[in-house]
Amino acid sequence: MHLPTVLSVIFAAAGVTAQLNDLAVAAGLKYFGTAGQEGTITSDTTYRDIINNVHEFGQLTPENGMKWDATEGQPGKFTFTSGDIVAGVAKSNGQLLRCHTLVWYSQLPSWVSNGSWNRDTLQSVIESHISNVMGHYKGQCYAWDVVNEAISDDAQGNYRDSIFFKTFQTDYFPIAFNAAKKADPNAKLYYNDYNLEYNGAKTERALELVKLIKAAGAPIDGVGFQAHMTVGGTPSRTAMATLLKRFTALGVEVAYTELDIAHKNTASSSSVQAQQATDYANMVGSCVDVDGCVGVTIWGFIDKYNWIQNGNAAIFDSNFNKKPAYSAISSVLAAAATKAPTTAKNTNAAAAVPTTLRTAIATASACDATATATKATAAPAKSATGTATGAQQARWAQCGGNGYTGPTACQAPYTCKVQNAWYSQCL
Picture 1 (cartoon, one colour):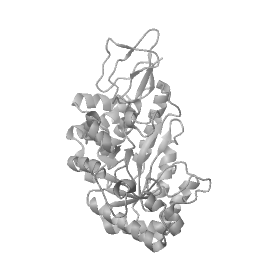
Picture 2 (picture 1 turned 90 degrees about the horizontal axis):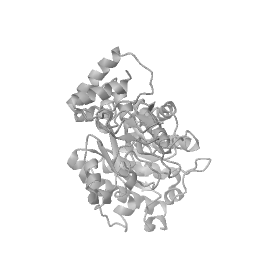
Picture 3 (picture 1 turned 30 degrees about the horizontal axis):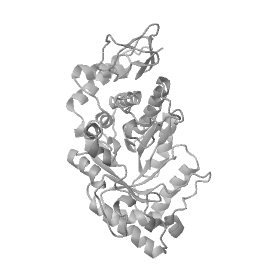
Picture 4 (picture 1 turned 90 degrees about the vertical axis):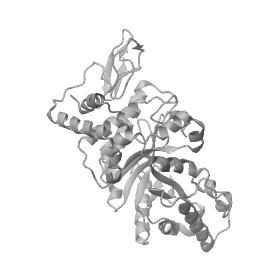
């Protein structure tokens, strides 16, 4: 019996609902989290209930509320109303809070981006902004994205020609990180960027950036891989793990900070969803495979409110149904949990894993040690809690897979065929 199936059966028998953060912590990660959309938390109760579920999401990131335009729209006038929404949810639930972001070329007020600055005046503005914003959230943030997206997308991976780079060149990196350390000595300090996942010129520049900060004697604790990917264009699990290790070799931790995997067009077929599931599994699995990768944050959990409109990039559809990608992630984490010791990266969160889940995982590990592997057949994969019903699925529809709870029979002349451990389809 395949390990994910063993886990599904045992979870069901134990009455365990294996949710993503519980599984991630059991697998050795510090957290599995999501970005929280400030306005939607206050307006949509179903969305808010899922955000509040600490078994699903053990970490939250405010999507926009802590950015410069939201916190200091006018010089020296600070407001934290929006940022406090997600921070308040995390605090009340005991969830980790990743705070985002301090120094970024975008969502920057015009008084900063269009100002006439010299090194002294702009340094004073940067330090004041960091001191005030981090001071307001001092002690609440597990980590801060101190500098965000400082590298351009050109073929050479040059540093982005922002107001900060024009004024300081690369000197603004240590200025920002030193100010952040002073403002909240206990927060992890990150550099965060996208398109680092392809091991190209931008990746090389990011490695250089880490070395520059360290050489200047400034503190940097981590690198965030935003991981905005496309279906079918995601590197393999092995390739991503190898890439992450290039950064951990420099003495920093890594994390996926804004993971989503968008369809290349608006069409969402069963086969595309199956590929999306595989891609999500590879990304999350690569983090599990690297000791210095502490966690995964998805950039919004539901298609309905996703920043990539019509991209179907999230793991819940617009009706709050879990997609195959959700089951793929849970399968990868469950498999890793059977062999994961408590490590330095998950010790603080280990208590969050329910005893029933830990017992189920231990039982699954023992069963797997004696199980004989079998090849997948055309029979539908059983879900953790679902059984066959009178309803029948149409051609191309999902009919089985780990975590799936819907009908497992197909309309004639189609049969339910296993595509992978988490997805079976009427073909």
